[in-house]
Image 1 (tube, rainbow, N blue to C red):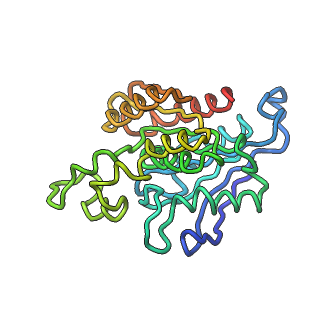
Image 2 (cartoon, one colour):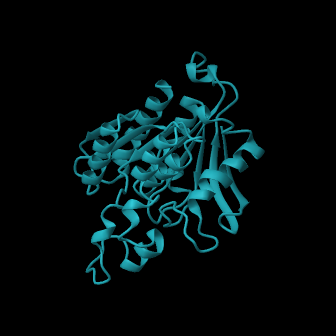
Image 3 (cartoon, rainbow, N blue to C red):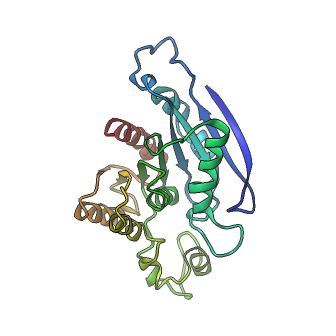
Length: 267
């Protein structure tokens, strides 16, 4: 098992992007020689952190080394700030492009990873769950699967916000305008994963397989159920699950593993 911290020049960010990467052994360890996941080349899973997190969140909070070893996965954990992994018009703030293009190109050129769609997946939690859905659907030719945990699918609620908001839960009005642009139009823009999903269908592009999970006590349950209903109506290739839990690692850790197994075993 190899763990590396990497900084590389990203044109989308106009500076260095950063990520941690876990690389599994080339051969399975002696205690699991019959592991079927080592009968194939290594696959790549990009994991996105939540709001205000960074590239260490998954590394320190979840058993990603076990995921990597057990499933023969290269796990890549980039930093995305508080960007919602979206592209802004301002120079140096194109985080969707950073993950979907610059990071992928670097992994291919430097590590020989993520070389094809079938071997490349993306996942995340909260803001990163939104980012995984959005980036995966923005680049359906790159990602074959998406894991979206307790996703911050707030884009359809933005039109209700105003400059006079009191006691904002996460951020002030100016933050949302800076991140999503015109809040009255965000729902109909490509910032909305539903818009991207429909676009891909219209253009004849295969959408990634999707695994979604949310806790029944999570404050983001309602928008996750709305996304579930949308996917059902679209007859998408998806799996949605709920269970007792709030917005924390106790819920995310087992469902991240379940999501990995779902994507790997339903190809």
